[in-house]
Length: 369
Picture 1 (tube, rainbow, N blue to C red):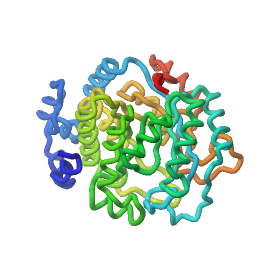
Picture 2: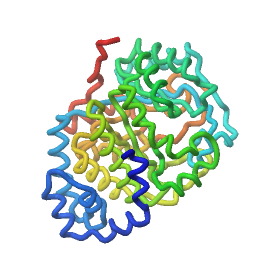
Picture 3: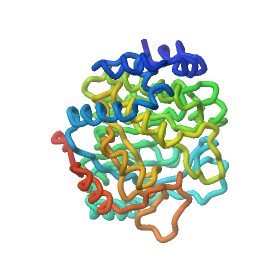
């Protein structure tokens, strides 16, 4: 059964109601177990679990050390284009926004790459808007080959592709993808994606599987908190990760916990994710998915990110810019979203070490290249 077929069995409103009915007894039962099921996940996402965050945190710390050691991997995003054909109402790159569109040249991309390499960054996330004609497969392949001169690990966050396209990019040097479903509730998905290829819910949902079938070693997924009721979205995203983890044993599955913040264009989220509930979701993810990575980006404030370091986070962005050419260009383009943690790589490394953890710049080398 595909995950698309699986998810059709769930009604988001029913999920919210079921989570709301979870009791203290079910939370304690979940915390006593080593392997959790769907009902245990619901319990850990419930309001009843809010009085047990310390116990959840202690278990999350232990599991993180068991599976990942005392390490935090660092990466940086690199935006090369903000052209987009979609009208996502929550995104600064929305095609209807009257912003200056930009596509970096190969020379400009290499200048950005040199800058990040000089900061110590060895894992890069290459991002574009979703515009197939502006950043076609062939162009992306050339850019990836260029970036591999500076970074042993290049992941992409671009438009969804077919499996054969991912195989081509893997051959060029890509080892992973990030792709957010954005929202798992199908009715809300349709409303917040009024136009563009992204409107195809099923095709986007099955993107991680197509990448896994192409042999990519790392896949990061997430739901964009703010678009739909928080707990049901967290539940469905965790089920998606579990589905992928069970079927693609050679692929590292990771989750991000992005929440909408300061989007250019004035979009305001309908469902706020508080800091406390953010922490609860992170802990529930770790307990339900002990082998999965958890990424926290510079969307979050510096103090908040620092406090998450010992709670199950395994991947941190550092020194980030979300503008095209944001590292070296004098004239800054409109960012996809505003970052909240503007610290340098050096500053973030220092904090990680102060927390008793080891910052990892490089944990991967493809010897087949």
